[in-house]
Image (cartoon, rainbow, N blue to C red):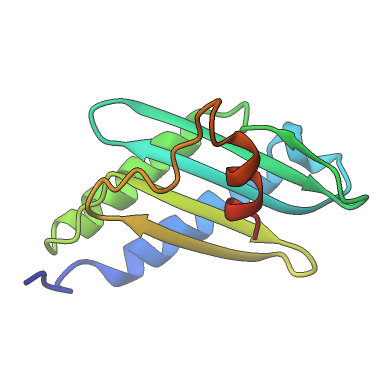
Length: 129
């Protein structure tokens, strides 16, 4: 059983900061997008991948230029792990109007959000906010 005894205020602040960093990143800031999906992996290998969903219905593979997003996600993982809730990857979904930020976590390293050449098209749809 896991405990919720972690610094919830710090975790909330990090979620907010991650969302702000993504939205402000030059790869998104000047574009007309309706959604962003970003998978951030913080286990053995730190990486991120994702998509920007454009207002015209198209999409492109895109990640932030700022790799500080990975570091903030790792900070969030450390805060949550202090309460026994460590995870291997998170899915950040941002949608407009709003913007609205949602983050889900993969605690069991299921690989559900891993994009490969064989599942690329499926993942574009599955990860869309």
